[in-house]
View (tube, one colour):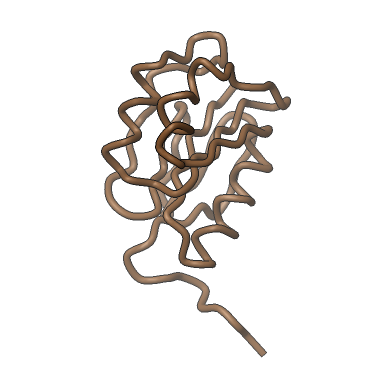
Length: 123
C-alpha cells in the first residue's frame, strides 16, 4: 500500500544524485544547485563550503522556507554560524550534511509538505 504519490504536483523532487550531478524533475544538473520545494531551480554560484557567503544565505529569505538543507559535497562539513545567522534569527532551520544525505532529507521533507530548500554543492 502506498501512502504517498510518486510525484507531488507542483513540487520539485530529486530523483538521483552522485558526487558530480543531481537529477531534479528529470533534469540533470552538473553544477551546484538551489532546489526550492516549489518554483525555479537555479544554479548555485559556488561549489565549496569555503566560498559560501552571507549574501547567498540572505537571498534564500525571499523563498520563505521553513528549513534550508545544505549539501556540502561528498563529505559533511559544518556551515559557519555567521552564514546561517540571517535565517536562524527568522526562525528558519539550517542543517548541513553531505550532498547525498541532503537530497534524501530534502525529499522526505517535501513529501511531508514542508517548505524546504536544498542548496547542493557538487564536487
